[in-house]
Image (cartoon, rainbow, N blue to C red; front, side, top):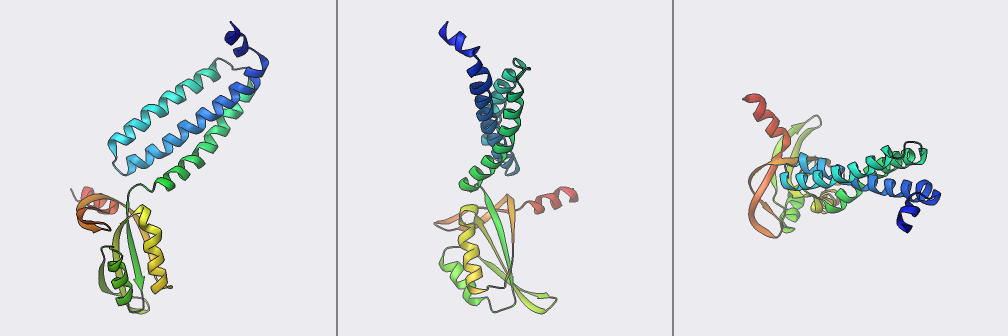
Length: 200
């Protein structure tokens, strides 16, 4: 009886309930943001698990709003939770550093020292000569885990501060090399997949 009375009290209706809806919305949108990233990386089971909890929490929050349509604070809490959830979800995903990326560096200087240092740090490296607008250049290519991306970029900038660097998410699987593991499956750029699909 006391619980039922509190759930209908002004304190609960105008303070506790909007706060709970805000928190639920932050959680479900955060999970949804991470789920989209998992889908983009073909991480099926993690995406499905996130989707289950995302929609479950959303149903609870929207039910509370439908039961309190005269409470405008629930609308503000719902919208505010959505906005904050996007920020929190991206922050969490960045901290998790899930997935693999392809790093390309184009340098107009001798890349020998750079390549040797990347190899010393256990990064798999492929390099080739190329031609640019300003003349001959060197293309350095490496596939790294996202958590190792700052380290790889730091090495490139240290040895070639003016190098042009591009980073691309990767999906398809082939053989390759990663720090700390002698031979594992690597991932090639998603653009390769798109080209293969269009060619069929």
